[in-house]
Length: 181
Image (cartoon, rainbow, N blue to C red):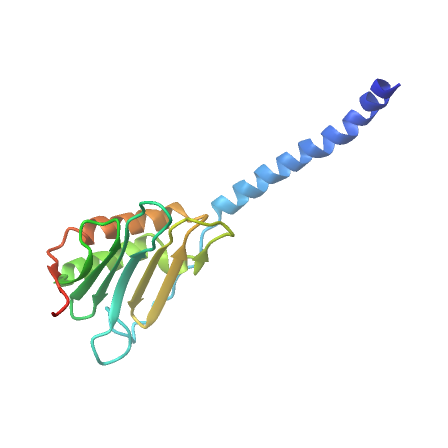
């Protein structure tokens, strides 16, 4: 009797599941094929950095620590090309360092940011999980400032841009700014 009842109920359970999977697949396909809206560039601001007259931040890349051996560092590049590197954990270069970046490197970073669609990305990619490091990138250019904090559900374009920036900037010649005794 129980087996007969289960046999009769089985189609009522399986049919909705089949449609649910089909709808999920269709929704996933639809979300991956949409493109972000075009980014309107305000040419009234300086090409590199914010609108302030003084030397302002143009680009920053930060990798935050985790409970394990995640590299943690922060790189900042300013309009003038001056740069700082702060090694915070699990990196070869610990502490504060100074360096410089050429205008060509700055132009390349900005071109890559635009090419990867950085200015159209969400401000945050995150979820309620613990012990995952974040990657934080900020770019100030042409009157626009965009900061993306990414930890979970990060789009491949963001990961590619972050990887490119890290590979380009960490090997620069950095001078240690040892604390004064």
